[in-house]
Image (cartoon, rainbow, N blue to C red; front, side, top):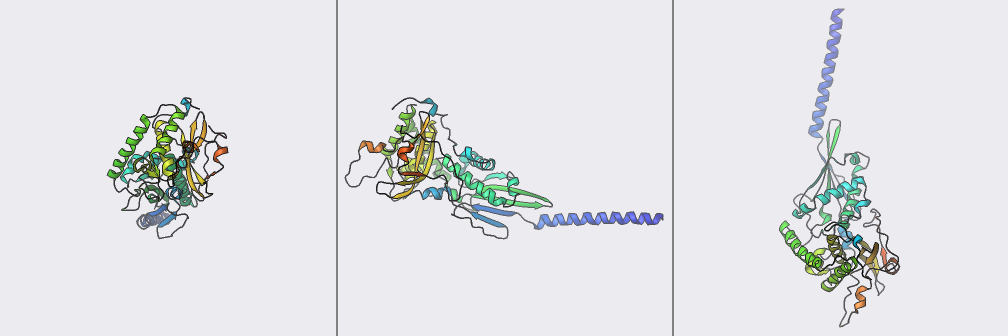
Length: 373
């Protein structure tokens, strides 16, 4: 009887050992042969197109840069309209979800390092709760697109970055029963995310020096009176910038085109205005939609909203700087046709669009004064 009991316990011990060896072997196999799954979200097309490879999923959406590239073809001191000098108005940031804010903050905190053109923004395992959900990669991809849209609208000085070349990468690694994720933003391997006309950090730094010199000159002419300063920035851009009819200038959609080349399209005007306003602390937002000109032609367009006297008003610097045909003369009043206007005046030929990209998030804008300033 005693021998049978001993035999039984030895049998149980052997079963436990065999089960343990099988588990260890399975774990080692899983670790060795279940590799990293890399998912790269591209944002350079106007649709979601999933390419199912062995380990890679590419989700392509339209970039905010591509979208905005399509966008073409009374004097009293009001201290409350100023904020801290050098602050960036994060108007669209406040409308993001927690996950979208994490992505936006990662971009914002790495902003000075983006001048390398290859800097990798690391998020590690921060989005494990999102990626572990069903369709988690698509959810995170949509959050990335929304965060990028808010970031590029809040930050008018990203003249050297082509957002369509920045990809959200998701690596999935399984060890036994545990799944971990590594998320980061980077360009394609061996490439960079510089905008056209820039190929190195040196190029960007030289451009920054030129832009900041012009910015500081404009600031030196300002008074601290909101209305007067908004007018001075508006007038400077009209007097010094030429509309780029052929959209050929380097940085024609950016502050580089407006402040260095002195030639740009509507986005260049609006970004330059916001850039200066942000720098001196005047509250300002980039608006976009469509505009119908005097010839009845409707096109994609961009303009600004600015806070003066405790209320928000609209400015279209592009249309206040019309192209002279032949030897025509522009009346002084024409330069202020779209200066600090209320919605009653502006909405006659400007239609606001709340989505920056097709199928994207609907953002809200400031409540505009009904009457002109």
